[in-house]
Image (cartoon, rainbow, N blue to C red; front, top):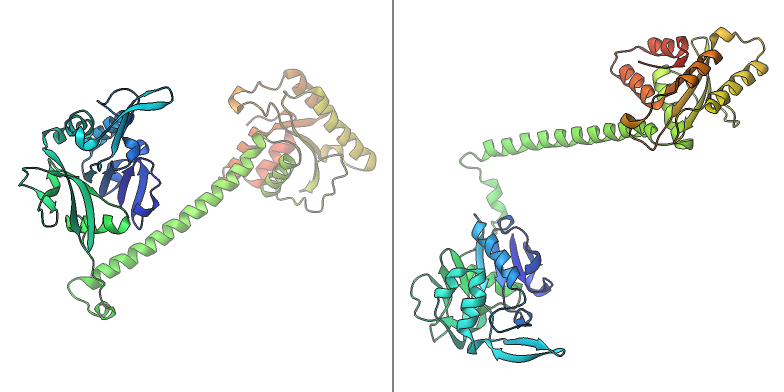
Length: 401
């Protein structure tokens, strides 16, 4: 992968396969890429609202300088500017002074470029318009490196001026690269990338060395990866279902009722599919000769007497409609998500007055967190279904596990 850092980051012509163009101000980690190209050719770099000793983006260059210093594996290329017009001394809505870069080489080199890469200050940069062959392309340059003989990577056509050099591990170039094709040609010319010749189809039929062993390793590990991915998907599905169950700690209304009834069906072995909600009790089921009648509530406050009274009305209404029912085999449950707007650990305990009222009525308060803990014990086989039924049937007041 190659990262090209420019003034704006939107030079689409420079991008391509395995090449991303980013704004220099928002440079990504250099070591995420095999090659990083810092392109200073945009004319918009060369502005200063104060004097001609710096540019507005000097802090970005300083930040990038630290990234270059800390880079361990990436190949880094700095593309110097062309002969742009440097504009400075901003006042009254416009820049008051300007200077071509060729006429301020020392200042550009010592006060600006050296902030990006200090060794640039040692270079003898001279002005001269040249062209350099990069593959089948001709790239232009406004400057060259004078009196440099070592580590020269590109030279101009005919005039033989050094236009790309290696300096202390960093590649410095005066060339102007216009598009992705020229970028690729340049990188091939300086030896950072190579053309890869496509192998013919018949090469696949030739098995030599330890090809078969490596193919077996690939196939074996692909199978393991597929199994792992399948396991991950199954784990995600289970976690999603667990989160759906845990939603009874913060929901109310129909969503709360739906999930609570699903938990009761799984844990107690009942079926609510035929239950008809007549806007009285929230559930009614016969399990092992016991009748469970219940109210499901989600409230922001603690349990109130009116919640218990509402359950008792359902209980009394059932007795009115079933005069021959055995009261000893009727279990009234108030499953309540109280103080649902608070974390479970911050919720107040149910007041003794409400617990006493529930005991007097022969009903049982089950807060949704306790219901989940009981369901968890059932799923982990710590409690059997019969034990869960017995716990709900034999207790009154407030269920504690």
